[in-house]
Image 1 (cartoon, each protein chain N blue to C red):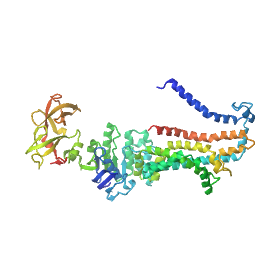
Image 2 (image 1 turned 45 degrees about the horizontal axis):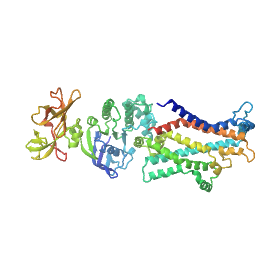
Image 3 (image 1 turned 135 degrees about the vertical axis):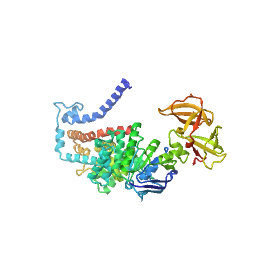
Image 4 (image 1 turned 90 degrees about the vertical axis):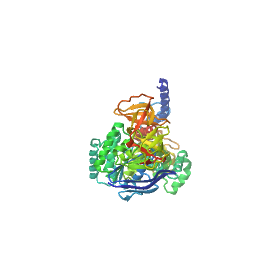
Length: 275
Length: 354
């Protein structure tokens, strides 16, 4: 039996953390709905009848490019999730199903990517991407993000493939399925909770990333939303209303994806913990 | 249905030989049960026939066709796994038709076969359910149904009843026997349960340490075991054994000094050390005057019969089947009377002598 005191203590810590994590977001959303003067005079007060103003949102939606930036972010994020999951699951399946000479070493090599931050290789990546004539394309971003996220995806998914009973795969083999069909019709459907987990881990950093869009796709209407917001930050004048409004709306797609995945996510996390 | 022929089959994992020179004929339409203690290689043999394990030597042919290098699906076999291995994300109907879908069978044909299998196995009401909504026995039937719809040459069963509770096990055993008659199928069935083996098999194959100890009709194995291992393995409680020394024509003495007079096998010479074996039902209790003598330890009452456990001199233990009341109590000396028609002798290597 957990004592009353420790229950309160745990909740206090969790509530404290939640407040800390939510504070900047609430601040951004709150101020995005205020007049410019009010943002600077009293940044911590919620919008009232005298300070309420949606001018920021009007300016953001009046700017035709913002829609493109949204589209770019969505394409990059979904593309990254798709290829990370596909290749991650395939590699995870291969690593745990087929035992060949270097399978252990290969698995270890792939997991090094979890520990080495990909940004250390930024210079090499830029020269590689420009060598392939992919500068200012979304393809470049998707490629880099897939490379960035694949190691963790392979690591998590191969653990989950391991938990799928061997008999199922053998039954499918007796049923005459090819290895590809076993992967797509037996393994993939059973990996769904694990893939939702990986999708969420992949999605959030990719959506929020500023670094690679800035390096690889900074112009030509290929900017992602995080980069696109920068246009409101001028050298001399910054349109704070528009910046805050754009950032507030940028939260929405991530929130929708998260809600879609979260039911599966919780199942994935718990089914991994309890065998 | 087809004949399965296995010739000098070898299989090893690294340096460990799990199958050593296995020869086995499974006649068309027969029910062959592989039985043996765990680790004897019976499951490996079955999986080799299925094509799930690569073999190191020898030949497997199904219906006269060499299948060593064929993929499982090309061997026209169907396997029922111990864990049932039902696809958890498909309903019963899809589970059963899944293999056919990939074989390019027309939809109408798949439906017809699934309906037919569901009728045979009484699964009609469950066709739209997922495996997790089924009981153990129902899952078992779906697993069998999945095998039936493929109309295989050979059915392979890997300990299919070991996950069921005792009552269900008896029912399903009877169902499988009926199914064999109905389908006239060739079946290879692995189990460690000798009751399943005795009741289901046309031919039992007793395996031990990667070898076949004996193959034959259930009652042949029971009445004429080829060696000590088979004698011990088939029959429950196990056969009682005692070492004896031949002292004359049809005369012998146990190491404890009990004198016995029984017909000895041909070729037994004075001074030979043999093992005498007799099943509990071929023994009865008598007065401790002559023959085998021991001390009554306890009596297990099973209802119609009981088993008297008797401590023999030298630490061995005999089990004697008893019916009705026993006059004597625990710790008292008893004599054991052997039915002379049902005595087995084994030589020093464990081989049976006749």
